[in-house]
Length: 358
Figure 1 (cartoon, helix red, strand yellow):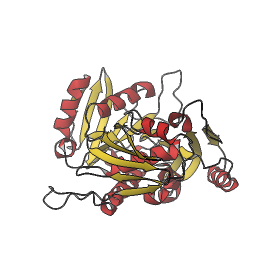
Figure 2 (cartoon, helix red, strand yellow):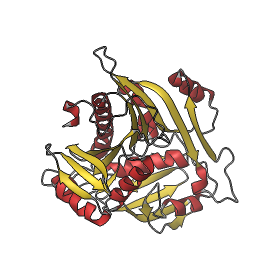
Figure 3 (cartoon, one colour):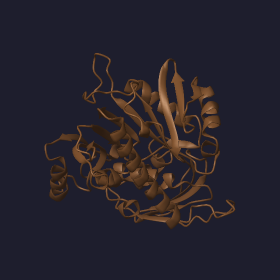
Figure 4 (cartoon, rainbow, N blue to C red):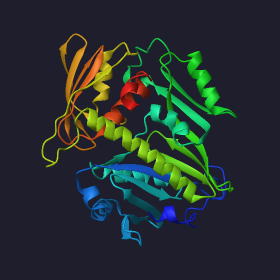
């Protein structure tokens, strides 16, 4: 990969500024983590896929001196898409965050074969230890208002959002967990990590990793940032591939048959109106991104044949007071399971599915 062999390019340089976009026009580097469907057009021919998707969005797509790195131009703004890790892509830019977010969102929406990398709360919390970096800041989020009618709020907190700066952020997070300040927990939405070189030089980066695959970066070394983000992507890849192995989602050698074992997720519901929650889960909107018409098959038992808006597959989902059971057909990505469980953690109970996301 070109960036891994090069110092911080002029187009990416951030010169140790804060990761807040300043009035002077300086902006932090943004890296967006994307997941392409493993057995379809994006991974077979990334350039052709990007040109087809880009044509719908007014993006110009060009090759570079690196066969896995492509330049995307949107109305004069440059984005650099690195596809060297197979189905897991990284798109870098210094464009202002509101514009960069729109381009990322539009690119994902342009095809069912491309989605965000969804970093579940449990993985975000483990990143400092697993990447040998220092936790500087973290943010917490929990919002049950999405899944309950306003006339029937839950018994405890229905919405919590907080961002914590602390000289000992990791210790502060541990104390919050141990004190059980928030019933049913609050899920990690982002973590800010500082990474340095092992050589004793003054090269470093400070990166905030968000649950939807966005990374904002400052520092003085693109190499350090690249090494850290590659480590994070590898951890995510291991999680997705583990899920695909455990539930037999991977294609066999002739890439024709796929056996999808059911995923059984115990859920301690924090919502009184389960029927309303189910209707919202399959309403096609973020964050579940599933569309279906649930039917009531027994008391507190609902079933939906739902279309996953990522790859267009139809999942059969049974929801009861005890658990959620998902039947996964051929072609389902592990990404679908990760996204679904992360959404339950943010909007129902932060402990949901933790065992599957380890």
